[in-house]
Image (cartoon, rainbow, N blue to C red; front, side, top):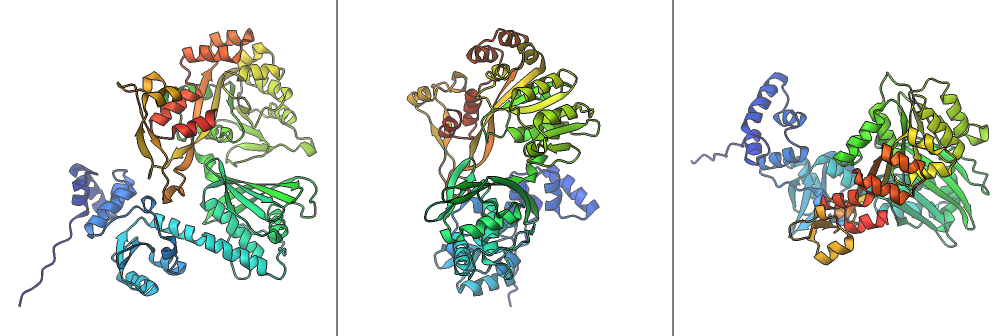
Length: 569
């Protein structure tokens, strides 16, 4: 009788070396560490930064003779994925993703789990083909399914069918969830907020019309329609949001604002809420403020090396004024908070005055402007100067009095950070002078001005390289230093895939211009030169304009020419 012999399973280290992810010497070191700690080899390699999570998964899939798939790079058949109950899919970390001939391909964190395969097969009533996938991608897909359009429609129908659709309860729970003991309106609002966070929205617009309630999400700086609940749900939805934000539900004739903190999947998220009376009823705008934004340093902001060096030199000085400029929604507050993150330590006293306080940071005194109570920007700043500050952050310079106090404070040994609404770095000094600040104070106090815009980042999963023709190069005014020997350049275009919701973009980054206040620029400001003249001199001294900085990032494949033109024109 012949005895069947199975091939011995290959070692994980051998596979990683074959794939070219690590060297044999690295494996030897990791094995030594494994013997000391008792950890798995893959964990040792990943913790030491020798391999990424994806590289490790690819090697594990090869070790178990399984195919590895990146769910962000494939189109998922959502109707098929919904055929397995969420509870079952989450327990087994498995989800059907597409059909392949007479089988259903199932993405699994552990394709060798026979019991999980049996349960999925029974739920589908068809043969299955397991493939390995990242568990985080599986759970992200399941979250998306849980907030699918069909789920939203079910919630809307339940709210419409309720006997009292405008009924709300006075409680405002922090943790969002949908339970059978909650009213349909509460369930719908919870679903709405969760869906906005899951889609990476920065703002939610709830806008009444004559016939319906229009809901739009702003994702990567662009508004798009999300859903259209019936008009009959308007009063209940607005009242529920007012209760959660601690806003007077009886007042419907005046604008109001409030704030709430919710918890979604263990993550605390702040929302700033504004109500606006319109001819069709109250509109609501919610700004989603993720607390993790405040924990990022300047290195995450996308500065090119020469820009980063110039900006870093300015904010590491013990005194002076640094101004971040740009239109509303250009990421100015994020830049300021990232700068504070770099400067925050126990040796400095940092005080901020903001309207409103967007991100809360430990170890910093943050003051909220309250005009009704008499706490204005100028009054707060005068109090700050008596509180022994080292660094002061002013949310926005809005008037001449605030500007003068801020500039004078920067000349008396304080580092002052603030924002201003101007279109370019070069136009900022003249804007301060127009607000009533003396020119000699501007040139003495301002050490750097950063102008910025936010551009959508191309989706790495689907962006497509293209070579510009000489005509397109001339039309785009591409700087000569970026062109190849043939006078052209390779750029990337958006395509669209499941990872970016078919938009071609995923996430945003900043385009900057950083202008230092050199002695020559100071002389031009004293002479009240035009912003065009100041910009020409700044460029001669090495400043990259928004357009040049953006074109370099286009050449790096970070965004498209079309997107660059959208944000800087």
